[in-house]
Length: 245
Image (tube, rainbow, N blue to C red; front, side, top):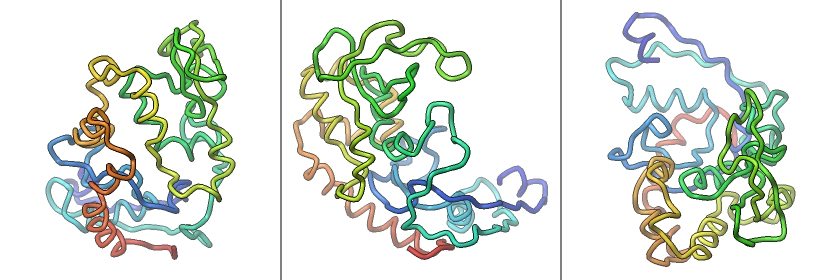
């Protein structure tokens, strides 16, 4: 979008469904933690298609330079309340709708010592760690060319949980984005100096989440800390929606 703006070239986005477009949740990015994995002040789950998101980035003046000459070709018949199973997997490590559904909650584990199953047939559906009996489920990450080459804990048995059932029972879940597993794993290891790595704050978009977990706050207490920012984002978001909720 920035390159198109600089060059005076119109940009057309052929929109597509967002499988996690049916809800908005999580902390809003603090600009002090801006990175390639989090560029703009949006929550972890922003509940927009890529076309709607582009409209917001353009309309809110978040681009460097002038706004882009942007056109969106909308998706016929799409609504935000749909649970969408994509025909083509968006990533080698997001192979099915369960992993995509769980991704917002489990991606934060990539900033920790916990494996999310890269190198298995269930990436982002399982969590675990070698050497600790932290669950009845176990898996062994393997190097898979083009998918997960030399994943964390390669060839080591990891013990933990298979969370596929959580995704499959999504209609009974109050918060699709949840911190229960993250808080639980941190409390089990009881060592905040080794549990988190420097990548965590970039994934979270702030350092408050890590500190709240270290300080023993409950998920409800942590959620209360981002509600005002989330409400502000919702007001911005609704200006750019193309589809009913």
